[in-house]
Image (cartoon, rainbow, N blue to C red):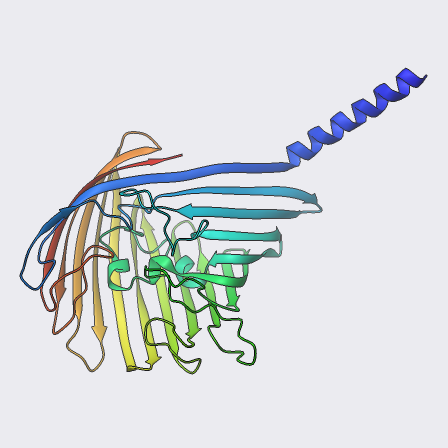
Length: 362
């Protein structure tokens, strides 16, 4: 009898362990992507340079871990830890953070998902399906580096989808704790006693989407504090972006575009600009052709920029691809926006760029 009881207990424990294993899923994933770029007019002397980009190529390189656990009743726990790194020298990105791209834990169900940590905010998510080039080396992220780096430290996030309608929001108690270099590192840690607005940030999104078309709008307000980058050196300073984005599918062809209105109230003064973008993506067998035009119109200033980019990608498989890109950035007035993200250009000069690269996902 004792043997039968022990066997039954062992069997029950084994079944429980199997059930727990079946209800839990953990995945390791990533992208390794690098290329060679040739850029003109990288300085006032009009010199050119050939280089291997560090910030991104066609997609930023990364390695991530994500998992879910079924808690029953339609409720799941989930987490995501995602590291970004530079392929040219192998260093960690996003202000030298170990999991600088994402680090979040949350719960999700039919009511949506609620999560805590360093997270992609609604400005980032609003452009995902409308920016056909994405976080490419030559793209709208070159004009506004915040767009492909729109993440918030110390944030609470909600996202829900109800019959095609999407509602999302983030609230950050301190939007960026890193003082290291890079467009996302703005040295505004927040969580300051006695100053409820210091480095706070909130973003919101509302949209509707089908397989054929989608439209959304987002709002992003960030506050500054002593030492913060971008001239936001006081909690009275703000940087506000409002976006309207959309896409339509014409068979296999996608057309996507939008406008980003930006208003800054910084220690250096007030600025107002609109960034317009429109792109098309069309697959032909294993080849995908993408093209995009963009313009930043800065109010009460001649410092405007125009960009045009084309990219061709050949997919060896679902995981491996080679690509080539060509683009041009025209700077007006004293504008000095480089075509390649994180690059340099002589003030008021046009810049041409060519790039070839290789990407593998896992």
